[in-house]
Amino acid sequence: MAKVIIHGSKGRMGQMLIACGEKMDGIEIVAGVDEGDDLSAIVDGCDAVIDFSLHSATSSCADLCAKHKKALVIGTTGHTDGEKNAVLEHKENIPIVWASNYSTGVNTLFWLTRKATEILGDDFDLEVVEMHHRHKVDAPSGTAATLGEILLEVRNQQRDVLRHGREGILGARTDEEIGMHSLRGGDVVGDHTVIYAGAGERLELTHKAASRETFANGALRAAQWANGKEPGLYSMQDVLGLE
Image 1: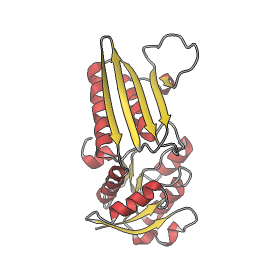
Image 2: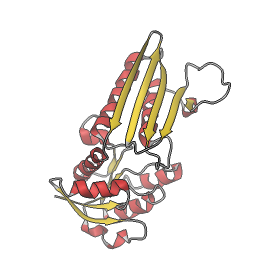
Image 3: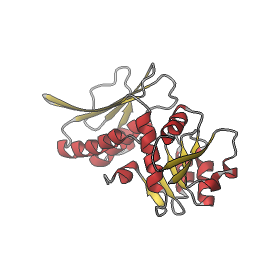
Image 4: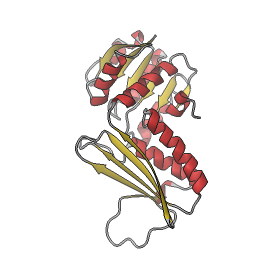
């Protein structure tokens, strides 16, 4: 049984994590904390903390987890480089699972994107399109950013080829650029598409989430998996055995 604290418990994902955790075998949600609550007073009572809070709050959560030797699962997105580095300092002390998306389907999309990019080579133009609900504050989504990183890695390109939207007289599309487009509206949970546009054909890889439950169940599964693991930085690909 893995005892879990939800950090960011009043948010949409926090509430879903609590609801799913109450139904999942092998998980006990021992507490939920949010802004203004004292995580340090209760962290000793858990095996793992799942963080779906604010990007500015993750590093202090990681500090406490490292101090008390608790596994940490991070689902929060939008971190600055400085915030990321502050968290990563603790990977030598505790197991940290850090993923932009905990859906099994999305992580399969990550795997398929890598394979498709390797197979298709440089003859296809690459575009990433994502859509989320009107309340999402960061863009592109963490999942879209991960897809972009996979494309860059496979093609051995630098981040300066990413083009976030297009406007005006820009000239013809270059062979190297990778388009990144963020749509916002309504109550869309999360849609992601990778487009491979070639001469005479187009391949599209798409994942559409209808409920946050899939993300919550994945994060809870990651907390179970991380409990008792050796210190290090892990991804959902590790949890699912896709690496």
